[in-house]
Structure formats: structure tokens, C-alpha cells
Image (cartoon, rainbow, N blue to C red; front, side, top):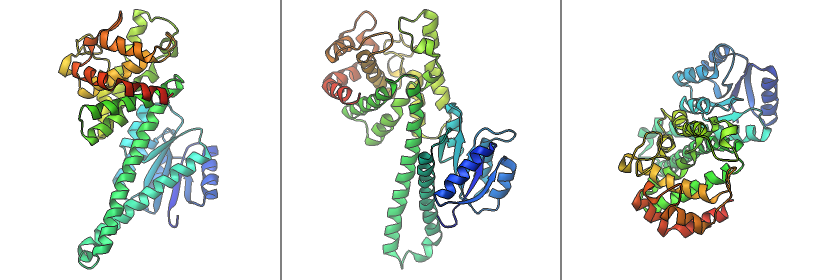
Length: 361
């Protein structure tokens, strides 16, 4: 922790005092507790801050403004954002502006300790790699052994950064659990179903991983659907169903404009996982290969889990009856709404679907 100064920026004095007291207790050095972005920026320009801890929403210039300015300072300071907002667009925008992680208010000391430690550990690895690269040309012939160790550290750093980013993405999906206590298990199962089918279809390990991480975000847009509609214990009216259908577009808008392959894929799935092979789906009425492969895979996984699970408007259905509905159809659906090749793949591995469902409850 030596020379790793932390700057706290929040317009609420109790929050600043709580953070300062907590971080000092954990052994960190506090460079200052500031209530506005302009003063914080002046301190950051001096270049001796290791970590910026900033609120997103403040009177005057916001935490987003501060993050944007931080990118241009080239001072190797990491950033964690604090927010009491459940607005996922804010969280994603902060990550895209360079924030390493975010913490939701009210904060817990355990979460503060874990997040600050993780971000500073990642910064140390990156700084070590940068320092080594600056001297690599003059030392490469004399320090072959040291080079090998450093390259191992570099790979470890990349893996750590990737895991941290994936963790931040997965935390976004947890927000949906506040809507429906069943959603958390549903999301975990969706990822496992999709991973299983991707492997059966022969997708590469990289494509499979991206699908596994991204597919649970397919219903992210439901966070904006009113509870009176989403949790209604009975059939929806046509007007209510039109409201529910908007979750595809809303989810895609939340996830758009990211450079991450995970979020790009998640956006693609969010907007088109209710499209149908026969063209009868929504929101755009796409058909056959017009529907992205990722969405065609997720559609069957989502439908299987939705039919099997208890919902406010229906009871749970057995594995055997669920498979019969998917493969043969019923009054509400028909097999031609799915990609025939992917449906055949589901048929081959349906017992593995059942084991996933029974083990993840």
C-alpha cells in the first residue's frame, strides 16, 4: 500500500467521512476528501493519486465528467465509482469511460475492502508490466530468465483484468433478481444451457465463453417493466403484452455502444431472442438466418426454462412435457419457431438440460 494514495470525491459529507474512516482503518493513505469535481481534478493533475473513489451524481460537474477528464491526464490512476442509482446505463457508461469497478450505495465495509484491494492489485500488475516494457530493449539479452517471469506476470495481468471485467458484467445481471426471486437461478441456468448447446454445435471455445457470459443478460430490459405487468398472476391484456415486448429494445439500448465483445453479443441477444424462425416473433419480425445465431441458441434455452419453471401466471411443468411442447408444439407454440438444426441439437442433449435444471434451483 506504500505510496498508493486514495482520493475520495462525494458531495455528501457523511459518505466522505465514512469512506475516509473505513479506508484508514484498512491501512490506506487518504490524499483528500473532496466535495466537487473541479477541486478533485486539480489534485489529480499532480499525478500522485493511485485510486479515485468518486460519486457519479453530484451537483455541478458529475463523476462522469471527472472520469472523462481522468482519461486524458495519463497518470495511471484507477477509478471506482459510487452510486445510489439503479440505472444500468450509468454503470455501463462509467465502465466504458475507464472505471475499473462500481459500488452501489448503501455501501458495506466488506464490499469496500474487497473492491479497493482488487482494483489496486490490478493496478500494481499493470504498472509493473509498464515499467518492465520501458527497459525491455536494453535488458533482453542479459535477463532472459527475468523476461520469462515478466511475460508470465503479463499474462496473469491480462487474465485478471478480463476476470474483473466479466465480474462487473455479471453484477449487472443480478439487478434483475430484485424483480423476481426466481430470476437469479433462471439466469445461471440460461448460461449453462447455452454453453452446452454451443459446445454441441461446435462453436470455438472463445465463442462459447462469450455466449456463456453474455446470454444471461438477455432479459436485462425487464428491469424497466412495471411489476404490475411483469409479475401479474394471470394472462396479459394485449396492451400489457406490448409493454412486455419493449424489454427487448430497452435491453439493447442499455447495452449499446460498447467495445466489449461480451456486451456486443449481449446486445444482439437482448434485442432478438424473441424473434422466431418462422418470422412470427418480435420486435422486428426477423426470420431464419436473419436472426443472429446467438439469439437462436438462447431462444430455445430461454423457452425451455420458462416452460419448466413456476411463474406468477402458471405452475411448473415436467421435463418430459416441456420437451414435448418444444419438439411437437402446443396451443401457444410450434416447433417451426426454432432453428431446426438447433432444435435437433436440443433434442440430443435434452437430458443434460434436465440435469442442469435440477441442480441449479
